[in-house]
Length: 400
Image (cartoon, rainbow, N blue to C red; front, side, top):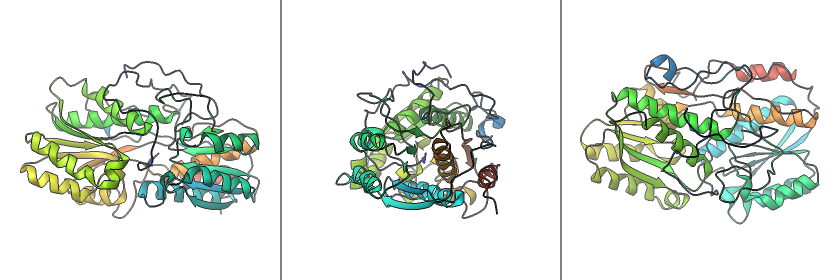
């Protein structure tokens, strides 16, 4: 990637949906420019495959992760671990939280899940303080950025209670409006090639752009729906735009920004429909995250356009994967990943922190899924070509 260097120390935090915490407020403004985009972090020996830049199927459909770490300190059983969800009403938040809970149980600790409820009435801060008051040994969070909980994080730090997160950005991220000191004990290191979550999202966005270029023979006219108001949307958008710069005959003919307020009010469908009216010759609709759109809404918009449209997105929610598996076109492809891997990864990192060790890359990757590649079985999430759950249990010594 021809991008500028990000100056962030790769220490104990460098990290979803992901994962998929798409309905929480964040810090930083939306940008349609790839300037200031992250540079791919260099790893120490991961078997990752970079996003394709030439449209070759070998690059575009390869899984970008690698095996989880093969050594770890022996877990101390019975730890009291609290898990804070960004909002259980959103599938991305709920699924990510479920993966963490499963991993906490697998390593032999006691999980307590609390719903941060999209930070309504300071839901995130109250959740951290409730965990501290209950004597939590550690706190795991999914989809909650540091800037939303600075006070409670300082309280946890003062009490020496570790807070580890997935699908989140620390307070020192350069895309924050006012970067400050990092306050998370650690954020999930995604994999050896892209340990930082922002870099990982950027690379996913870039690969999605490469897929669009390949499928349209470099003639893409794109209605681009992207999420604003949270940093994960910033990085995914920057990666997509970087890819499209390689395609002189590709252009965005409709720019649809979607915020938390739009999602709450149901305005995202209206915005997308309006963009389709203004750009009736568009042949692509793209979105960064499955949680942000409903396939039924996309189908309605595509039907109104009266011609074939390539609909591609991100995350790989099961309902969308089932549409892809059936040969449906809305969506026709997604950049998918197993969200539970995030959960096993943050639990592995917390275990290392309990033992006084540094965190390591956890191997989490993604792959483009379409009808002919990586589709898997009906009703399943994307199945990575690595049995990461068995690998973690073997490393922890908890395999039954």
